Image 1 (cartoon, rainbow, N blue to C red):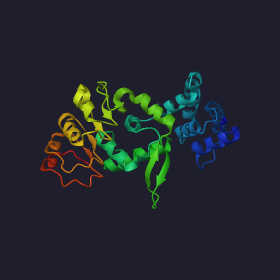
Image 2: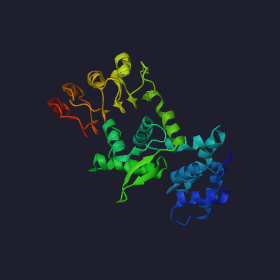
Image 3: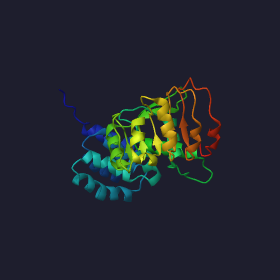
Image 4: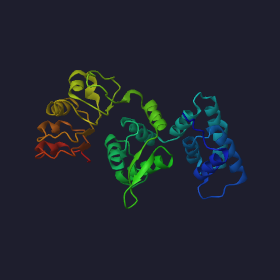
Length: 294
């Protein structure tokens, strides 16, 4: 077993300066405070980058405030690194908090497609345009870039044109998302699961056994990774019972005909029917989905 050490003090300071100052040449006051802040980050690269990005472009008074209040919170916390990550989360504006915490619906180490996530954000109503005339899609893109700059996302993959197509979330960041979202998001692990907490609003996995027996299913806003033993029964149960759905993924179910009851989901904004190559067509009732975005 090899115990991995953190960064050296010199590398820790250089990483912080890259994150906090970019290409600028900071004054001696900034550098001195930066060194004191880095000492509290335990030589952990993720923590250093997050604190640096949090202070990037801030005034000297903001730096003093963080040094006096933020560092005190970190030093008094049993888990210093996790407290740094939570501190960064609490500095986000409310819409960005919702966007980040929603990412807990994906498993750890999951490769998240950017366009899918942005569509899910818009479907849930988390996106608020930053300025007059800005489209929802542009606002969602801006939210993503802010979270990326603030180190909430990592392992970015780009296409041949340099556009981001996918990314991951660090395990510690995923823990923070789960902590702040609480019971609102649930990942159903076992097929035998028959009940849900009444606070659950988003399911990362759903099956017919759960829908038939859980009373809380009517409150669900998101159903991802739909799958079960009887796919046609599952589909009918979802369309009949989950009437408040805003996001529904039925990718790869291999269903030939989509029931007319799809029209019951008046609040539906995101619908994924990809990889259903045997599907013959869509029912006329789908025209009732006036809120459908994707």
